[in-house]
Length: 119
Image 1 (cartoon, rainbow, N blue to C red):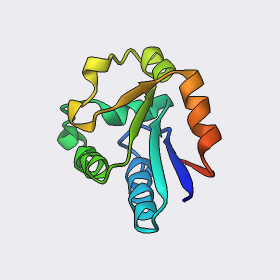
Image 2: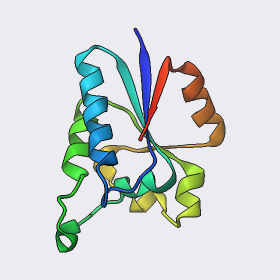
Image 3: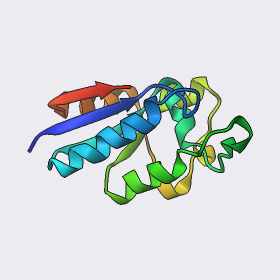
């Protein structure tokens, strides 16, 4: 079985990268491709609980992320990105069961993948 990692680098609002990444990850499952989602850089902001973007005219990405989780796509957050942005583990939505990974773990996941898609 192939394995693909979808890397989320952008925040949840102001562009379509996050929602498109979620669609890509779900589409890969339909093709029977093992898929992981890794959130790095500003992408870690996607994982923050209690988002309410109504004031900026956007829908929350949380429903799509929860669906991705329900489809058994593992969700990882890069520890260094969280620290650099002042995001604590308790700030992350517990429903997503995010696994925080170190640089070594991130590297290992990349080595195990057949392909990566970065958005």
